[in-house]
Structures are given as C-alpha cells and as structure tokens.
Amino acid sequence: MKVPLLDLKLQYQSIKNEIEPAMLKVAESQMLILGEEVAQLEKNIASYCQTEFVVAVSSGTDALLMALMAIDLKPGDKVIIPTYSFFATAGVVARLGAIPVFVDSEPITFNIDTIRIREKINSKTKAIIPVHLYGQCANMDELLKTSNEYKIPIIEDCAQAIGAQYKDGKYAGSFGLMGCFSFYPTKNLGAFGEGGIITTNSKELSEKLKQMRNHGMNPKYYHKFIGGNFRLDALQAAVLNVKFPHLENWHQARRDNAILYSKLFIEAGLSEEEGKTSFDINNKVLLPKPVYQNSGQKNYHIYNQFIIRVQERDKLRDFLSKNEIGTEIYYPVPFHRQECFAYLKNNDKDFPIANGLAETTIALPIFPELTKEQIKYVVEKFKEFFS
Ligand SMILES: *Cc1c(COP(=O)(O)O)cnc(C)c1O
Image (tube, rainbow, N blue to C red; front, side):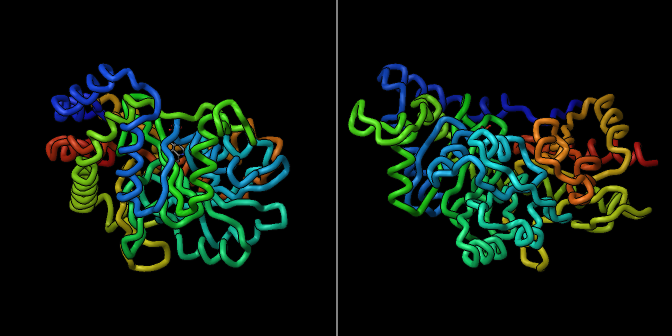
C-alpha cells in the first residue's frame, strides 16, 4: 500500500468545482494584485483568528521579516527564538543584521522552553518569537508574563498553526503584538503558490504594514520609509477564500488521524501513553501530546505535522520508505548547529532537548484525506520493524 507523506491532489479533486470558477473570475477581471479577493481573505482571517486587523502578504517568511521591520529592529539588536524550528524564524532576524538568540526546546510540546528565556534577556533584546510548532501553541501564559515584565514584544510564528487554540480557546496569532502566518501549500491552509498574512490588534501597526507591503509608499510615489514588494496575488487569495470554509473540517480530519495513530501505537505495545519523554522497552515510540506545558489542560492542536520520536530513526525511515510510506525529518539540524550561524559561537551543550529532537523525530503522514486503512498499515509496518 502506498502512503505518501502528503497528497495535495486529493484535496484539489475534492474542491475543484469550487476553485476553478473562482480562479477564472480573477482571470476575467485581470485585477491580479491585492484587490477585492485579498480584502475578503483579510476579513476571513481576522474573524477566524479573532484579531482586529490583518495584512495579507507575499509569504510567511516575509510576514516575519515585516513584523521585525515594523518594530524597527536594528543591526545589533537581539531577538529570542527557539533553536528548533523552520529556518525562516532565524533567517529573518539575521537578514536585518540583528542577532538571533537561541533557546532550547521543551520535551513534550517541542516548543520553546519558556523557563530558559529570562536568562537570555538583556537590554539589547527587542522581541521574542515563539513558534507554535507543528500546530500546537507554545506556553503563552509564561511568554506573556515575561513579555509584560520586561516590556519586550512577542511576535508569534504561526506559520504551522492557523486555527490552533491555546488551552482556553484563544487563537494562535491573537496573543502577541503580531502573528505571522504562511499559506505555503503544505500548511493546513495552503495557496497555489506563496502567501502569508499578519494579524495584529494595533491599528497603527496594521497601517504601517499595509504601506510596507507596497514599498512604504503613501501617497503614490512618496516614501516615508523603506518597505518592499510584499504584496499577495489576487489568484492566491481567491483560492484561499474558497478553501477557507473547509479548514475546520480538515483540522478535524487531521486530529482524528492523530487520535487513531496514538490508539494503534498504544494497542501495538509500542507506547504506553501520549507525551512520554524517554525511551524504554514499553516506549519505543514517543507520541505527541496536545497539552499545555506543565499542566493537564489540553490545547487544540491542528497537527500540521504528526511528529513522533524513535531511536534508530534513520534505519526506521529506510524501512518505511521501502514499504512505500512517506516520512520527513523536521528538522535534522537546529539553528545553533547550522553552519551559517557558527559566527554566533553557541555552545552545543546548552541545547540538549533540541539536539535530542533533531536526532529522533520523524513526521508521519497526517493529511486530512488519509484513510484509516493507510494509518493501520503504517502502524503494522512499525510493529514489523520493532519485532
Ligand atoms: C513555513 C514556515 C515559515 C515560512 O513560511 P513561508 O510561507 O514558506 O515563507 C516560517 N516559520 C515556520 C515555523 C514555518 O513552518
């Protein structure tokens, strides 16, 4: 049985009859950049994420870059980020000449270890970027406490977390000064190309960001500050507006898949329960847990990725691949081990959890259209591998 990591064609087939007319409408209008479709997308996302303002932009990476430009981040300033995330989180900081300050991860949620943040703060620290990794919110209570105490803004990296909710039902992107989202095709809400969006409750910031996405121009050909071309295409917005009403169902399907995986791994004797953090004879597979750090309360996890941990990961991955099961490693190299950040002279020993994650995590297929039979087949193959 073939089980790809992701099959976008299945989703397209299921909504083709809605998407094609929407794309044709844009083609007929020849209003190709920003415009009505983009404005509608902004309305949809603002009401969904429960923030007052949103600004649609060219990608998730650009959303993060713009957020840092909007707070006037300067060369030499510092920004605290997790060492274990997708590269964009760190890249945007360094591209502005600022210094990314890496923090280790927390072993159950894989998110930034909020206990380790305070010791890294000094007068140069201008922002904290928590990443809601794989679709589960970081420890926002602690982050907000730290943010308020030190008067350092939080910019949320929500690229993998559109619609994720933190314990009591508050949405990713509604906590910090700004929330940055991606519509890259592999995210839960994916465009037919690149796209992103920034959420904020600040009117002033939203106006600055709208100007920034168009070279800082206002009025036409007058520039008070330097922005860039960070505009979103109307075609992308049209596709996203058609997909938007389906999003909650897709989240639910991913969540159901995650529940089934956990149930089957536990029944197979490969794991005792979700959220274990060390390997032993009864826990060959460490399962993710949709839980608020250091408490029993649940998060609404949207499972952009379903990440488990195993020893002998690379051998297992080969075995799964031979059995036509697609997997991926997110992420094999944390930032403090990246060649491009060697100049920061971080000490590898300061990041034991992230290092462990990099060596043991593996992503299994979780996309909404996956069948129960495919999930059963994946767990069967795990049993075979470990027997
Ligand atoms: C995808 C992703 C981004 C970047 O989004 P793009 O739209 O691909 O530029 C940033 N941060 C994280 C955590 C991501 O997963």
